[in-house]
Length: 126
Image (cartoon, one colour):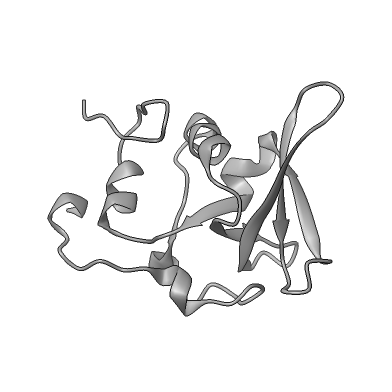
């Protein structure tokens, strides 16, 4: 189980921006729109992510900005290339399907196995 895994992995060190996801285990998918919203809203800028491209491939990216439109809706901007010019803007409705976190350590794995969350992304067991 995730709780008994002793090896700590930081897969962010294995990738450069724009590189295709090599192994599914390097990413952590969201289990619901609520989970994606809860965690991504709190995610700091410059955090690593995998983004689903139009080619259906997952590529390594960096969270560059959080922008709010005139209606108060939050979108995330991710850089897809190191030049900072190639970016993708994702509205909240696409976060669950089009974004994954990069698995960074044992704690990250545990957080995503739970369905309820505290305000700052901490998991609570049920």
